[in-house]
Image 1 (cartoon, helix red, strand yellow):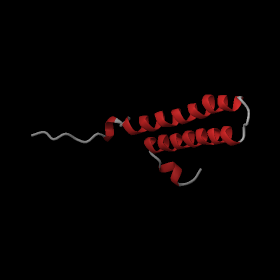
Image 2: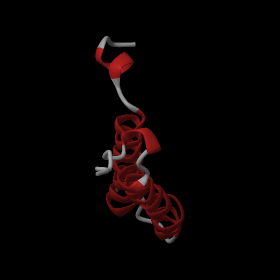
Image 3: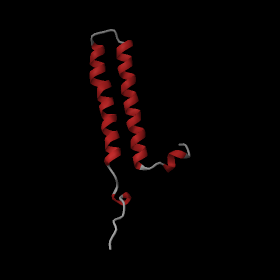
Image 4: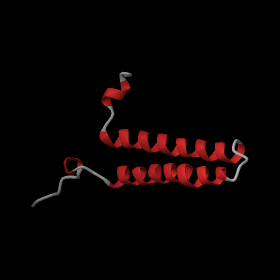
Length: 78
């Protein structure tokens, strides 16, 4: 484990996982496009590649909008 990984917040960790899932999905899609010249190549594209990209996008949006209550801005009282 690197020294920078210990200081990551939960949101940063979610960003990294969303990046990893999205990149893995793109690699699977590129592999099915160029490597699999077979009718089942589309199944790999649709079933695995698109699913990984979709999970990465959903996790990215969750990390954007899931703000912990302690990080909310304080309200002013008069």
